[in-house]
View (tube, rainbow, N blue to C red):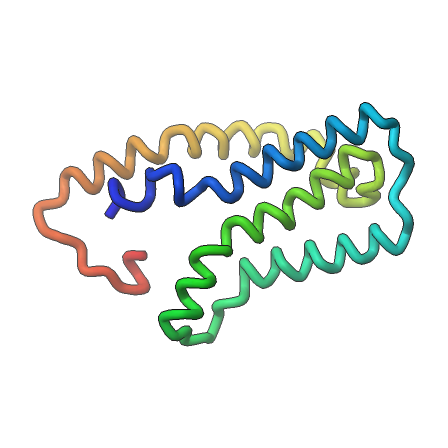
Length: 145
């Protein structure tokens, strides 16, 4: 399963493309010297981004999905979550992030960010070691997934 799904590029291409599109939008916006976003646009963006991100995080709690809904969720979950985070990054970069930008700019986050990046870089190695050392197959369930 690890080799067939987890490490395949097509399972993670959606968030990657969201990041590329966001970078393109930011660069073009700086080239044009675009002004600030209106208050209505900001409010709408925050509501949609918060709703999408929270739905991706907590949308499945206490729900039993049929096969179609589970496939839909599995297909779009990561991309929609990346879109929500892209909005936060976008408004912080253009200087309209407000309190969110101030909180995310705290020096407190620097050691934690380095630690999580290290874990991100090392986790495929530990997963490969773990799954390669198993003597029996894994029975998939909610606990093992």
